[in-house]
Length: 326
Image (tube, rainbow, N blue to C red; front, top):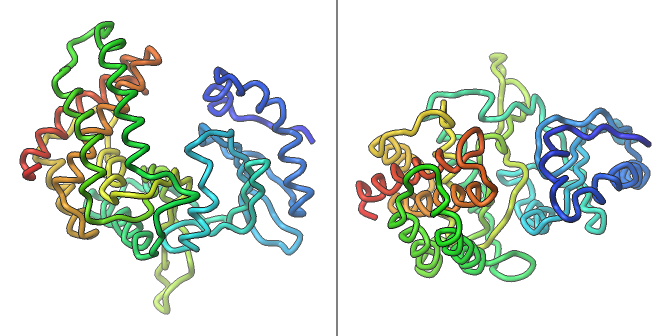
């Protein structure tokens, strides 16, 4: 079978050493999944930067989503995480083929994302916090197959430290080196003294939170559930997770919130999840810097995926952490 590869996915992986080979193999990977699971596969979804996904129907008439991931470390344990959560806050996994990095997922309808819905900030945060609470209610022990956040954060700290030395001197604008080094320190210290440990989603941004309509009430009102997709699971401090949920609100790509607004949002999420708000804000500071310097390392200093936005938000997050006692 011949499939269509969305432009965003192609652009995202083509420069990787294995990107061209994987793209050339997609026809075969999708055909094997369709045969293996008896699927009629539709046209792919346009969203997604690291996996080919499309609606499909099983021989029993069940609506599903076929996902074939580009092989990368962050996606390695997605299936294991979905099995562990077993629908508690996350989409249901129906089948998996580790060799082909293929997953068969229950389709969520209408499937609109939390980002698409543009809810008031309080409702937006309540949805995400509810998902975090449901996932945290499942006791998942540390150890294989999941990566430990201590190791993940140390790798991120080392990469960020190296980028401070090599990349920051090339910046076309002033970068707060002191804040960048503070982020490195946070990445190395935060994982070791956390009191709330569990399996974190790892990428709980509003685009990865989808609406699923379970039915209607007696009065005819919709009964909606919200579920997470696309986990990049790590085991450790659960305060690692809220950063994208709290940051990516409203016009977040063009407007940097005031520290007092970030502190307010953080308190709401902390109250709903029983997490320490200062720890959340400290992780947000560290992850904003790490994300910004990751972009800078690719030459993306400005624009849609530019370092400037993350680094400006890191300044605001550091001030919010101070307000919260971090």
